[in-house]
Image 1 (cartoon, rainbow, N blue to C red):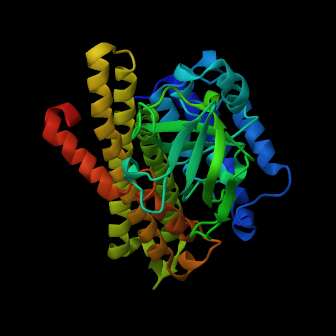
Image 2 (cartoon, rainbow, N blue to C red; image 1 turned 120 degrees about the vertical axis):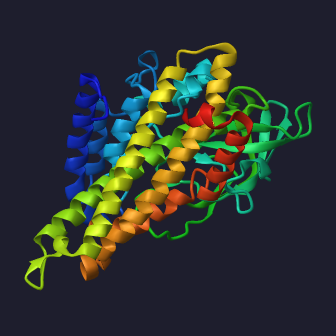
Image 3 (cartoon, rainbow, N blue to C red; image 1 turned 180 degrees about the vertical axis):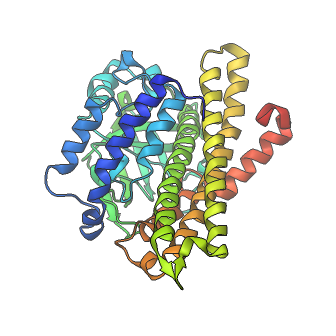
Amino acid sequence: MYGLTAADLALQATARAFADDLIPHEEYAEAHGGHLPDGVAEQHRKRAIADGLFATNLPVEHGGTGATSLQQVLVQEQGGRVTNALAWVLATPPAWWPEVASDLARDRWLGPTVRGEKAECYAITEEHAGSDVSDLQTTARRDGDDYVVDGEKWHVTSYNEADYVFVQAVLVGGDNAGDHVLLVVDKPTPGMEVVRTPAYSHTFAHEHPIVRFDGVRVPATHLVGAEGDGMRFSYEWFRFERLMVAARCVGAAERLVDEMSAFAASRVVGGEPLAAKQLVQGMLADSLTELFAARSLVYEVARGLDVAAVLSGAEAEEARKVAHGRCSMAKLYSSEMAGRVADRAVQVFGGRGYMRENVAERFSRELRVERIWEGASELQRVIVADQLTKRGRAALVG
C-alpha cells in the first residue's frame, strides 16, 4: 500500500514482533513506576541490538545499521504502539556526531553509545526557554583548558538513565561571545546536581529532573564541533526527532484504532454491537481516516529525506531547509491526530477507558506531551508558515 520494498517490510516485521513482545509488560510497568523486573529491560536492549533495531540512524561504518530515513520511521512507528516508554530501548544516538567527533569523543562516548554500553541525555530546555532554544540563559565561560558552566536546565529527559549529558550553553567572553556551544558532561561531575525530580502525567522509568550546573568545569576537549555550532546541532536533532515523534504517534494511533474497533465490535449495547451505533462509527471512521493521512505524510517526508541525502552543495542546503518545514508538518499533524484518536478511544471504551489497565487511558496521558516537547504545536505552525512564505507552496508539498 505504501510502496515499501522487501527490505522495508522485513525490518517493519522485525520491529513489529519486537513491539508485540513488549506490550504484555505494559501493565506491570504502569504499576511499578515504569520499571520492569530486574534484568528484563536489559534483555530487551540486547534483543534490540541483535535484531538491528538499535542505532538505525547511524551509518554502518560507525556501528549503526545504516537504515534509510523511511526505515527508521518504520521502526519507531512500531515502537510507538507500546506504552510506558518501554520501546525507548530502540535508541537513536545523535546522527550528527560522527561527522564532528574527535578521537576522544569516539572512544569515550560515541562508540560505547552505538554499542549500547552507554546512554546520553540532553540538557537544553530551561524554565524560561522552552521551544525557543535561542533564549537560553545557561552560560559557558572559557577558563584555561576548561569551560565553566553555570545555569539550570529543566525537563532533562532520561537523566537518571544516562551516563553523560549534552549541555547547550551561551558563551560569555572571548571572540565568540553570545554564540552557543554544545558540551559533553560526564555523570557525575562536581557542581552538577538534581534540584528536584517532578512527577509527570505518564508512568515512565525515564525521569525528567531539573538539573543545576554550578561552576561545573568541563574540559575544552569535551566541546562538540566548534564554538558557535551549538544551534546547528540542535536544529539537526530537532528535525530528526520531530519526524520520529510523528512516527511514534502514528504507531500509537494504529494501536488505539485496533483496540477500540475490536472493543466496539464485541461490546453489545441494546442488543447490537457498539460498532453499529452511528456516533461510534463516526469516531472510528474519523480515527482511521486521520491515521491513514498521518502515515502517508510521515512516510512521504521520510522519502524526501532519503532523496535529499544524495544531494550536495546549494541543493543540499535548500533541501535541509525544506526538510525543516516538512518535519514540522509531520510532527504537528501526527501529534494532534494521535491526541484526537486517544480521546475518542477513551470515549468508545467508556468507563473502561478511564482505567489505567486500559491502553486508551495510558495513551491519553502519554500522547499529550507529544504536542509540547521537541517544539510545541504552536512553534511548528510558525515554522511551517515561515517556510511557506519564504519558499512557496510547491517547494514544500509539490
